[in-house]
Length: 329
Image (cartoon, rainbow, N blue to C red; front, side):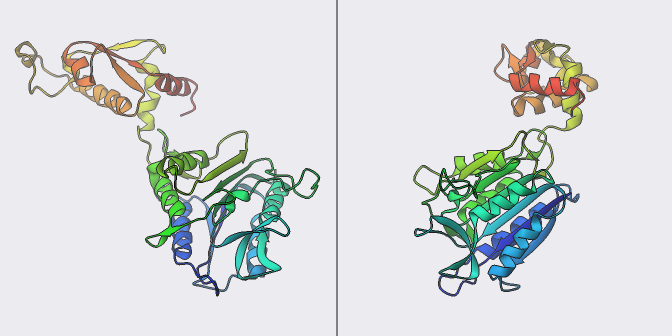
């Protein structure tokens, strides 16, 4: 069971925002289904365009997220965030938030996530709000009510504790890149999208002078937030153990693997491509494009075939060959 609570608040009385509702709806739509349309998360959406999201609604919905059992629980919030200097407490701000009752503290959210483990095996908290990087900081070494990041918890935030989460073109800058990553921009070879990959995608896109995202985790294994089409078909990856009997093997190539005959030496023109070899070569080329295989003594796979050279596995390719050998693909 996978469930997600997605919250977006634009309609603040004092300082309204413009992209949070759109962000929340876009994230909800992506989390609901995988790239092939298969079910993914069971999503509850709270946006200020549909209902007032006051402090009671905000806190009750987050409390409900961590009730019962789940493999993965995701909390996404887009809206205002603050740190109260007098109490050194960080908040996500409800629609009616005001001094003394801003919304829900980051500490309370993390404590709920920590107490839910292991009923909820993995929790991912994604915050697109100012000062959100404060989440997970221990306020005081003597504070027994705040344990930091609990087991199985991952935090991904738009900025550091002193930072601001900016909007552009109707979306938060952070969430715009999050949407791109969840759409497939940061998927791995097998099409899996993890929180760590999302962070790397956002971190690499934002410059040193832009808002800086934060990633914090207390996990033993990565989880998949969404699955899209693999960059290399799984059936091709499973064949690596057949094409390469051992990780150091050099797979021999020759002109029968390459169907193109443009700009080749005359002596190659008369060599007829073999359909089976051409099919294998297309699979090897797909692996080459994604860093699993490299040609030996040739600049490109094309020249490796035309000049009867070979190709070999990279370290990443050897890893996937091993996974195939173990039946894990």
